[in-house]
Each structure stands twice: as structure tokens, then as C-alpha cells.
Length: 581
Image (cartoon, rainbow, N blue to C red):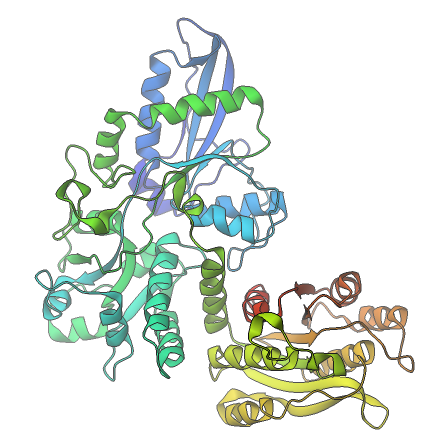
């Protein structure tokens, strides 16, 4: 048995331990009594679960772990899920907002047990079309709670009063808001679960304030975001006096396990675990056998899974402040006050679906929307938005109650505008052919700070109407690139987002070859410009847009076959921008 961690505490202190070539800590040669040879199985496990998995695997090996007479040697590495996700994404061609690049020395494990199935779902929706891990069933669980200093929780009626996400939303968006925090939800599953619940509460509030509530909550969370869980925990109060409580962190989405472990250290101000209704997605620790491993390793992985589903493993989980997949707990588990238990008939403690959250029906677009909205709210930028106003944009969209492509596109841009805070700079162009003399494009609003021209942009979107012209794509793209580059601003993501439902139809303009040549000459690694083209409907040429966006400008093209999906694609495209160096 080889172990890739020095216990949960050490794993947390180090921050990240990834499966790397030659990077295992410790070694012991397996000497099973009734087997020969060796199948080496590399298992990357979320740090808080790794000690339980390591202990179970060690005991299994000591009793002679084998498959068809061949010894099994299991290596367990305590691993931050975001780091393994980066490795797997790079291997399968996926792009995950906020995750970043994989370490140059990291390698993909044979079995991955992250803290949440949302990682598997994000990989699938992020472009890893062939990513089909085996098994995926849960081996442990931990509810996601709102952690709150006990004095603050008591003021809200805890533990007698049952609280919901709408209650928290009201507190976050009040005149005297509760100081909230979150671990970056693009990199932390508990943070993502909390964000999903809060966004759902905002959307379900209804009425004219729903969008305002959602954006307000996003910005409040963003102001208290931390890259690492340890940094977030350090923001909780260290004294119960009024001044300290008022200035310290008042609430954050964490796992139940986080709260138990925090309170076990006997802090000056313990944390209450609030189990808000409706219950957010729990951490479900899916057992993912990664695709492409050898048949012998796959067989070993199947047997190891059986080891992790025994009654004794539940007690190992309890020692790590974790629950079994069904939400029940083993001997020695000390639940926080008010913790729900399936044994007590509490419906809010319903276990995740067999096969993990991703297999249990979580809507992929809900996760994408939350991640994208977060990325927009937390990474300011400078963007030129360009909307096609050619005659074909007048076509009605069957799935949008007869609204035209133009109307659907403008509405998507309007919703996006609501997400951008005043640190953004936005401009608006429209294009067709011969909009101003022989020129195919027209500047409606120059790029400028939203702090002074938000109202102008909102009113200008109302004036965007289709012409009778064709699509002057190439001339417009070149002019836009030059404009953004001439006024390039350091410290921000400088970008172009162009919406079109057609292909270039300007016989008097430059050719594709000329456009690509000019763009390549203009591209400057010291002043990068991220180009995003969103094709609308079934009349666009995907190959043309891919060529212009990727080969010419080093950007990305997206196709919205159903124009009603433009908004979601727009959010996802913006979220994939890279932060400036």
C-alpha cells in the first residue's frame, strides 16, 4: 500500500496533493499470501475522505487483495478535486471556467473520488464529449449547510426556527446586509451548491425584483470570495464581542464536515450549521472509474468499490465527520445541532440518487448558468458587443412565441448587461452591409465605463432593428479588432462578442483570406483580445465562424441552433475568458 497523504490535517495544510509521476509519499511492498504479480491502482480522493479510503484499502491488502490470482496494490492520493479536474479536462479536451491549466507533472488517476458529481457533469458539458467514467455511485456524503457564527445564528432564530434560502437572500440584499462569503464556486463544490441554491431562491422570488435580487446576491458573495477554504474559515470571528462579529464573516456555504472539523478545534466562536430549505445539493463523493484504463485495473477498481460499501466503511467515514451515501452515519459521528437524519424520517436528508448527482438528473444548464454568472460577476472586463442587423434577423423564432432572431438576441444582451457591474466597460456596434455609406458597421455606443453609460446602453438596445441588408462579417470583424486594440486597457479582459445568423455576404468587402492575414498581423501577445462569435440558427456556416474566431483571432465560436439558447451560450462564452496576466 502506498499513501499519498499524511492524514486529513496535513492534506488541508498543504492545500493540494495531486497524483504526480514519482510523487507518492511512502511505500510498502504488498506480500499477499495467495497471489502473485501486481496490479497497481492509482486512486485520487478528496482530501477529507482520503484517510478513510486509505485505511480500508490497507486492510484489504493485508488480507490479500487480488483479482484472478494477481495481487492488487492500491495507491491513495489526497487530492484537491479542482486539480484533478484540470488534469482530466486537459486529457479529454474540456474547458472549465475558473479551473485553469493542469500542472505539467500531474497525471490522470485510474479512479477518481471527488467530493461532488458536479465535477463529472461540468467535464461533460465543458467539451469532454467522450468522457464516460464508469460506476459513478456515491461512497460517502456530506450535506451542504450555511455556516454561521452561533451568536448571529441565534439572532435569526436558530435552532428553533426553520430557515430557508429566501430568508438568507433577504438578509444578503437588505440595507444592512449580512456579511457573506464563499469559496470560489468554479473551484469548490460546496460553494457551487450554495450558489445554485441562492440563485434558485432569487429566481423563484418572482416579480420585477427577481433579476435585481439575483445580481445583488452574486455581487455580495463575490465581495467575500476566497480562493481557498482555509482562507474563508479564517474570516470567521475570533471573538464574540459586537464589533468583531459585525466586521467578521457572518455566513458561508460549507459542507457539514467543514463545520464539524472547525468546531472540533474549539474556536472562540463556534459555527452553527444551518440546514436551509430546500436542501441544497449535498457532496456525494462519486466513485468514478476513469475511461481508458486497462481491463485488469478496471477489475481491481470494481472490487475496491465493494470494499468501500461495507458496514465497517461507514464507521471509517464517521471518524472523518462524513456520512454514508444514504445520509445515515456510523459509530462515533457527532452531528451538529439540528442536523437532519434519514433515520429520523427527515425528508430533507434524502440521499443523492444512485449513480451520483450527475446521474440523478441535475440540469446541466443550471450548473453552467451559475458558473457563468459567477465568472461574469467576479472578473471585470472591457467588451465590444456587435449585433447582426441583416434582413435575416427578422425571421421569427418558433420556440420564442414568434419573437424574431433580433429580439431574442437583444434580450440576451440585455440580460447579460444586468450581470456586469460598474467596473466593466461596454460598447455596442451593429452591422449588416452598407449601414453608413459603403461601411458595413455602425458604432451605436463607444466602449466606456458602465458607471456612466449603463442607461445609454439600455436605451440603445431598444433601437436595434433589422435592416434589409446582407451580412458584412469580415469587414466588421477587422474594424472591431482594430478598434479594441487601439484602446486596449491593461488589467482587464479585452474582448469582442459578435452575434450573427449568417455568413459573410459582402462581395465588395475583404475576403476571408485577407481577414485572416490581417488578424494574424494585428495579434499581439502583450495585448491579447479574446474574440467570441455566437452563430444563431441553422443558416450559419460553423466552419466559417470557427476559422475566423479560432484561426484568425485565437478565440472561440459557438452555435445556438435554437436561438432561445443564446443567453446561456453568451454567459458560458464570457465565462471562458482568461484573466489578464
